[in-house]
Length: 170
Ligand SMILES: CC(C)(COP(=O)(O)OP(=O)(O)OC[C@H]1O[C@@H](n2cnc3c(N)ncnc32)[C@H](O)[C@@H]1OP(=O)(O)O)[C@@H](O)C(=O)NCCC(=O)NCCS
Image (cartoon, rainbow, N blue to C red):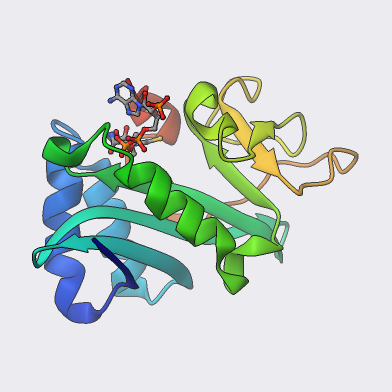
């Protein structure tokens, strides 16, 4: 298995993966198509096995007002036939070591039991606009003393809310 950044030629394979990993939801594929189409700043990696894209994750800017205050991890997906084999963990641990990521405050809206194992902790502040009371909002290296609602890239607001489509990793 190889981990690499996403070239333009791999984008269709990424969209196909997102459709398979989130059956019944077009939110994730629409989101990533828009991020690509708008030229939104993005850190993204794929796992390739035998020429197939089997996993994908992306980080986009998190905002405090107009200032970038960290990165949001979303979406993250593993092909259904490769789930629960450690692929997602390997990809995420790889991404967390990369220079663009490793010293940044990070945020993720997801299943706390899953993301805790990578160093994310329940986030009291900032508030996530897509979650109720930050129940599933996690962070690392973020300053909890700074109270505000964290911003996302506009593409995140154009589909079903993250809260509605969030799903448990099990
Ligand atoms: C969530 C997801 C990215 C996890 O990737 P993965 O490669 O399946 O996860 P891993 O194999 O690395 O699992 C790591 C741990 O999480 C648990 N886990 C992950 N997915 C699980 C699942 N579907 N069912 C049960 N346990 C799961 C495993 O028990 C494993 O624990 P262990 O190390 O103690 O065995 C992947 O399952 C996925 O794409 N799911 C559908 C899309 C999705 O929900 N994305 C996340 C949105 S927040």
